[in-house]
Structure formats: C-alpha cells, structure tokens
Length: 474
Ligand code: UTP
Image 1 (tube, rainbow, N blue to C red):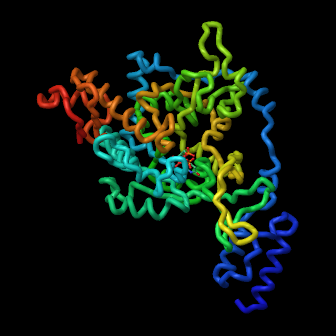
Image 2 (cartoon, rainbow, N blue to C red):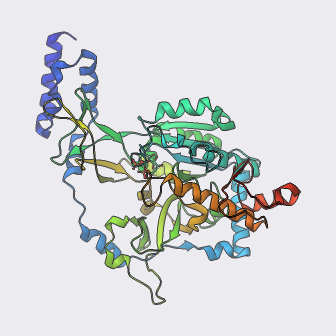
Image 3 (cartoon, protein in one colour):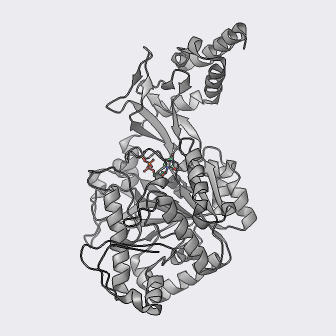
C-alpha cells in the first residue's frame, strides 16, 4: 500500500469505528506493517458492531428466570427405572441397534474450548487421562466410537469441532496418531467461529497492537460451523439421521448408547438430553425444565435458591434434572435450525483477558476485566419437537475434567478415579474381584461396557482371576 492508500484506509476505518466508540483499536496503526494493517482492517470489517453494542447493553434480568422457574416442571423423562425395566430397555435397545446397524448415526465431539481452568497448553483432547495407560481424551473417544461401530458392524463417522486456537494442533496430533485406527475419511475436523470480547465499558480489547482479541463463540457455534464446513452435507450423503453429541472433557460419555438412541427414536424426539438426578439443590449443572411444553435450560447461576430448593409432595426435588451436555439430535433438526440466522442467543461470561493498554503495555489482569459472548448448544432445546430427557447415573456417564489440582472437583485425579471405579464395578459385576486401592482401566476396544466385559471373561479363564495390581486391559 502507498502511504496515501494507508491514510485513506485509516480514515475510512475511523469513520466506521467512531459511531461505535471503538476508534482506539487504530491507536497503533502507524506502527503496523502494511500486511498487519490489512489484517486489522479485515478484522474490523468482520465485526458486527451493532450486535456487539446490543449484547453489551443487554442485561439478563433475574426476574425473567424467576418467572420461568415459577411455572417450570420437569420435561418427559426416561428414568433409570425405564432402563432397569427389561421389556422397555430391550425394545429401546433394539430400536437403537437398528439405527446403528443401518449406519444412521454419527458422533460429534466439541473440542474447541481453551481449557483455561485446566491450565493445559494444548487442545484439551490431548490431555492424558487414562488412569493407568495415560491415553488421551481423544484416544478414549475415538476408541469408544470404533468399538460401537464394530459391535454393530457399521461405520460411525466422527465430526470433531475445533476452534482457531486448537485447530492446527488437533489435526497434527490426530494425523501423527493415525486417527487411532479410524479411517481418516471417517473423521472430519471442522473449525468453529470466533467473537470479539469487550471490556466493562463495552470497548474492544487488543490482543496485540494490530489485532483485536477474539475467542471461540461457544459450543453452540457448532450449529453454524457444521453447516458452513459442509459437515451437514456429508452426513446427508452418508444417510446419517441422528447425531450423538458429547464434549471432549467427559471421558465417561456412553458414546452412541443403543438404548439411549432407541428411546430418542421411539419418542420422535428431535433433541434428547441426558441428565443426572441432582443430589444437591444448588448443584452446578444446568436445570432442564419445561414450561408450557417448551423444554429449556436454566443455568444454575440463574436459578434462585428458593426455586432450586422446591420439593414435590414426596419430599423429592421438583427441578431434579441436571444437564450433562450429552445430547442426541436429528440431523433434519440441525439443518432446519442452521437455516434460521442467529437461531441461538449469545450468553455473557465475565472472564480475564490479557490486553494491550493505551501505553502499549501488555496487561495480565488479576480479576475479570472482559465480557465474552458465547452460544450454548442446549439453547436448541426450546425449538426441538418432542424433546425428552434421559437419566443416567453419573457414576456411569458423567465426570468431566475442568479444573487443575488442587480444586475440590473435576480435576484430572477425580476423573481418573471415576474411570477406575466404573471399570472396577464392571469387573465386580462379572464376578471378578479387584483388590482395594488397585487402579483398573479398560480400553473401549477391549470391552465398551459391562456386558461386553462379562462375555469376554466368560470366554477367557485367565481374566477371571482377582486383579491385584494396577492394570490396563487393552
Ligand atoms: P467449557 O467451557 O466447560 O470448557 O466447555 P473449556 O472451554 O474447555 O475450558 P475453560 O472454560 O476455558 O476452562 C465445555 C465443552 O465445550 C467445548 C469445550 O471444548 C468442552 O468440550 N467448547 C467450549 C467448544 O467446543 N467451543 C467453545 O467455544 C467453548
């Protein structure tokens, strides 16, 4: 660019930014190379300033949530009693098995988060979580999908959502690991979009002197990214009708469980959400509720204590269903929703964001200084026809790794113990003793559930010996 062009560009950008009070992002313009000026200009043109202004102004009123909570009940639910009822369970399992045999199921794993609480400097999927093996979250998920596909003699394609900060490294990692044995064509990695954040005055933040800070637009970004990346078209070509959704940080997800798929299909549900029965009224999980037949989630932080503690006549919690971010979607539903622009709202999250200040210094804030805007996938629930929920015992299906030690919950140590406890239980149910304090881990390719393990033990005398030392079965 000539110096005249540069000045003209700066002038045009100033005219664009001034009405929105964002001219400060040009403060270091004259120090930038012409390539960086162009990049900054592209970033500015990519910002929707009207939307950012509205999101900054909008303040969720507590009254809105209280009004909903007042009228809320729990949506139609498949409970643990249904899973324990042999007749009901077998019918559902058969129906789910047919979908799997016919190749009508795919898996989505969202792995675009930045794992800031965990403090791990790579995509979270690369975190070693196997309690004995140290295998990564990615390996556990991919092996679970492969085991399920093998069980039903079909293919289950995997769609992994990354974000700009995790995309390249995820692809390099999966390639180096040969996709853990999946055919590369059956693993699609697609990247979600980003959103700028603002400070408490509504101003954009600079991550570098020539760059506006942006971050991934939340797991709800999956909806648009699936459509834009061609993943929805790919599913259509493959004849996929249902998509099983899990988040990379919960290695206990019962990936593509046939009975869960069956209950979902039998109900004609467009979106089925797995839930746990809350053990504490104030438990930090989203509360799945229904108001006038519309299923939705009230975040724990938005549910007043008075409503959280409400009980039924039998003394049990009224709003008992806590979401664990495991869902099944109909692909038709995804398609319909992705056609409606902005069909998911943005939520505000107060976070710490490092930035370049007006003196050109990089500031690492010690308290929350920024508002990030994120979409949540569960906000699709109100639009889904016949949405249902399905209960799971957390010991069987939910323990997510969120925090670094020494946090009180959701640390790697907690998750490793939960994996070992679950696999110990599978051995015990099959009549095999595991000595106290011994850690056991079963690769999904060895046995993907208690039933498969039992069959394996029945066929192999050696396996039925008591387990007296830490062992990885693979
Ligand atoms: P979380 O927000 O709980 O975890 O996302 P995180 O982003 O990994 O970690 P923090 O909050 O920075 O500590 C839950 C799940 O949603 C995915 C994450 O990868 C994780 O599996 N996610 C989250 C995305 O895929 N994209 C996002 O923009 C946000």
